[in-house]
Image 1 (tube, rainbow, N blue to C red):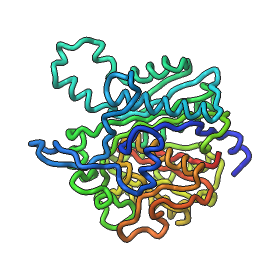
Image 2: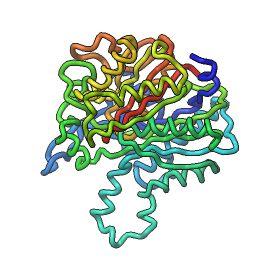
Image 3: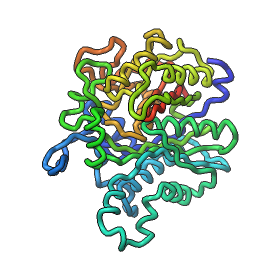
Length: 390
């Protein structure tokens, strides 16, 4: 790693998470280490709402006692509060300008559905405002007294990676001294899930470890999940978890759903991430994959693994455990990687079928080195973030 890369990296100073495993960072960590999926069977799927379906939904009962509003808002506030409190406890002191970036796609499918179905003509404007993407950002900034730049970013399932890359750009260019970076997605309403199932990407009728097997035989696709995961990203922190060295984004410009089978732009994205991070391919030891278990994503990621890294790095995937949390998926997976740097263990889904020889089998001792986090989103959105020791 070049000296320039060391000087220019940002660090993850605090982590907060709300996932299908429960409310809090430790619930996520313990759940991933257990090797058991967060998903459970839920009723109310299908035209007659008489089918059960698998999904890793955030438990309803959580958040601060005084919080009101939707589960989406309560989860977003809880994850950001936990990240900020965690960073402060680890000797982070907010700079003069603290910004906030929120990664989101559809966001809160439940309340939008309820709002339009149930008498929206008679509702007050105050009931509409919490549904706007600007409202949660405003509440977080007010609660903490932060005055830096704020924005929502959306890049399909690569949104959380895009948010982290943007946060580092803000730090690099002096837009902010620190950035709270949060990704939230609660779109597991059956009506939303059904579209992905009919496209052949999502699987609702099987246990996740039976259905979602990235880099293993018999994989059918991903199970849905919900999450809000937050980070405090800074240049200066007393006891950070991991470093963010850089990243890159490209677009296939090929199809609204499918990955370009030539993989040219995915490969270019990862190569750019290496260059912009100031590292070489042989320094990367771990490949934290997008890993949704679909054939086209598996082929694209193995193309990266072989053509750029010569088949060397360890592969691991977390969607069989936490579910595919859409806009928040990469944030959940970055949180696991960052915690792994500090705790010396990397969570990974257990192997249940014939697998790629480099795929980690469940929780594995961490050997050190750099981690590449790739996330691929519909619409041809490719992203790659480079993580290293703090």
